[in-house]
Image (tube, rainbow, N blue to C red; front, side, top):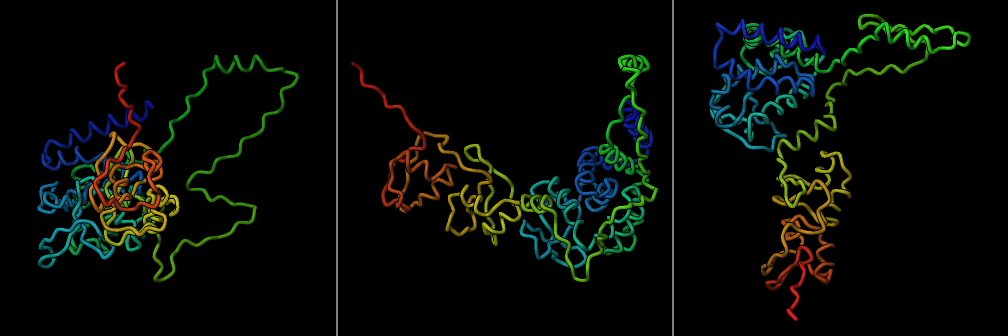
Length: 365
């Protein structure tokens, strides 16, 4: 713990001393988003120094038109699998389509997911500390058309000492060292042993260093991770879920989280991307045998049996299922509470539907 604190103190001191001749706008941007860059390295393995340098360069420290109007801090363009917001901007050619986000944090998250594409897979063969190799590999993989893109990233990293962010992320994953036992504790433990029953200490197996080659005697299966030609490396379950929620912001109704269906969504592909069973997702949404439509709510957990209000008034032609989705309540529970015919699917007249039990006022004696 002491070593970690000393490291953070030294890092802060070095940055503050070197910052005297640096751009104040860049320094403010780094201070605002450094924690986000560090977390992205921890979650996805993208070096924090590279993330921050790209954000500074692509967004002009948050001052570019794309960053201000589209919250796009990495210059990521639309792709055929992008179903989020779009912003048209003149870049390499006129009127190019760029991704638009709800806030800058979404842009940082999508940047990590974007680099997990097969196109950039070779970048992750490079150590996170080697920011120069990362910068040139990103350019060679086609992240930008500017031939000086890599030197620009390297200059930013070295000018603002962004490599310290990468080291902070690495230290965050290191286990805290165990404190050595004091001589007094060792002597106390030794005094409690029965000298006549002490067995000879067994030597502990040597833990190999990272640079050593470990020779195993048991047979193992060799698995080659090199993808075959034309093979697309799938996203992990977590990356798939993060990508889905990036385009489907979570909302809350009656204490239950939900998202809103977009064009192309089905219960099957939503369940796959959320890593849940399709039947469970349908049951939570009273949607067995029902298709998903654009604008429908998709609850991420079972709806409540009671609503957050006593009752609602329906209107002619309103769907009972839609009413329950809007109020975040179970259809079965509301049918039982109101003693409704389970065959009713649409209200033909204006009706009062209770969402919870209401105590009747007792008449005075």
